[in-house]
Amino acid sequence: MPGPATQPPFAAHAVQLSAWQWLIVSAVVLVVTTAVPAVWSRMEPLPVVTNTRVPFRLGDDYWIFARYARQPSEGDQTIVLGDSVIWGHYVSKDETLSAHLNQLSGGDNFYNLGIDGIHPAALAGLVDCYGQAIARRRVVIHCNPLWMSSPQHDLTSEKEFAFNHPSLVPQFFPRIRCYREPLSDRLGNVVGRNVTFMSWARHLQIAYLGGTDWATWTLEHPRENPLRNVTRVLPSPDEPPSPVPTAEPWMKQGIKPANLRWVDFTASLQWESFRRAVELLRNRKNRVFVVVGPFNEHMLLPASAAAYQSGKQVVAQWLSEQGIPHRMATVLPSDTYADASHPLDSGYQLWAEQLWADEAFRQFLR
Image 1: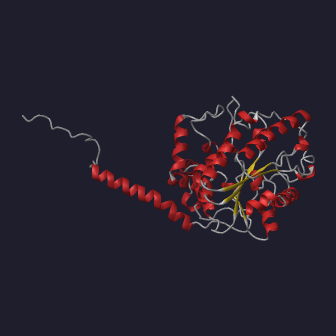
Image 2: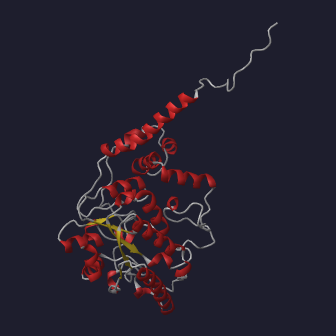
Image 3: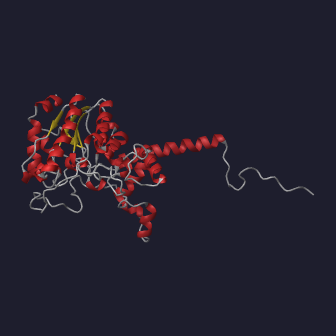
């Protein structure tokens, strides 16, 4: 009797591919994953208007940030980078620092690429992975001392806590002790930062599904078709934050003077990250101008104010040693601040006027 039939390797699989067939499949997948985001960017209109900014709801959408970064013309438009102080958390798009600089310069010469809540550790990751398109341009980058005002803000706290833009911070080195994501999530963040198709897929979730993944959305909406939500209509750049913040001076909001626990700037993770962001820009042949502050020193108690002045000296010394043009912003009147670091419209106007009158800044723009 004949013996049992010999099973070929991997016989349980319905289809077996040869080495050449695997190469063909890989090539097709590579073409599709590369082409789809590029085609989609042509199908989805980008809402760019005068004094534009990244829509608030898309602040975690780094694929859309990269599109906005590619938007400026080849002319002399200056990029303005930073956190919610640059984005304009308490003001409209026409009342931000870049908008007031546009008014002073007599044209649409400053381009707001601020992202709400993006601390320096995340900003460095954003510039590194999604800011390649701004290479060789003039860049004004804002240094907000708020991120060094406590171990928690500085991400040097030992206790785990949730912070903004975790997928942009270093996933493995340097180690961030308060960041306790599992290995699988960290690897996923690294892949997502380096594979355009992944960041595009995340864009669809943020822009059209409220930030949830497709499986979760369908479970929450079992009778609806998720594709109907993909309208290709993005939020307006003038959409306010949610919830809408109270745009009043800090004293009227009941905010009291504080004794902030400033970290040692020389050992600060956020200050080190800010320096890395500046060096990334300079290595890409960007001309860089750094604006430090204006922090609301009116709300600092004496001991905290003294520690802050010491920290500012560390910042100013490094910028001078590196030959980086900069301005240590003058403190604004107390009633022009909404909180510790965000100006109101009148504060942005004064800040822009001070910056515009600065000879180093005017020299930078030439």
